[in-house]
Amino acid sequence: MTQINERTFLLIKPDAVQRGFIGKIITRIEEKGLKIAALKMVQVSPEQAARQYECHKGRPFYDSLVSFICSSPCVAMVIEGRNAIALCRRLMGATSPDDSQPGTIRGDFSLDVKHNLIHGSDCAESFAHECQVYFADDEILNYHLDLERWIYYS
Ligand code: IDP
Ligand code: MG
Image 1 (cartoon, rainbow, N blue to C red):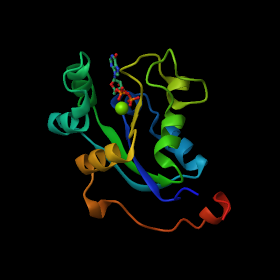
Image 2: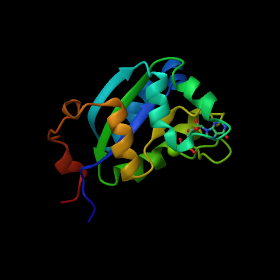
Image 3: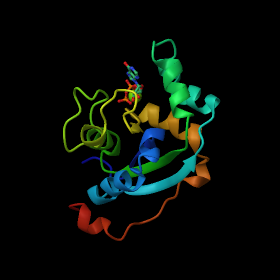
């Protein structure tokens, strides 16, 4: 059985903040039963964006992606739950609007590959790296959600 305390890093991107989707996106995460371990609004600096997206350096869209992420505030979150990394990727939907399915955040609200509303870690190593770009260790909270006994089957 997988751990119920796996963590992932999510970033609600500038387009989602500007379009008024912060609440909608957080609601989907909460309604699924995931726990918010850290959350803050952040004006991302070019240095932070470059660290977050260092794996994409050299790609044709890299410069435009970094400037997009810095173009307006974002909401950074650490989310916890069973299989949180893969689960949040499924809730987000595919990167491209050609592939993102209805019912996902991107599939429901995004039409453009760059303006795709949300970032989520794709593996544990990415989480460890991305989390450090945005959060100090003491900003990530360990607490018990009473509802968990109704969300997880033992
Ligand atoms: P992901 O966000 O689904 O993990 P990645 O391939 O890691 O997708 O790409 C990071 C981000 O770069 C995407 O979310 C998207 O905003 C942007 N991006 C990816 N491919 C393209 C592209 O072909 N053109 C413009 N932007 C892109
Ligand atoms: Mg990615």
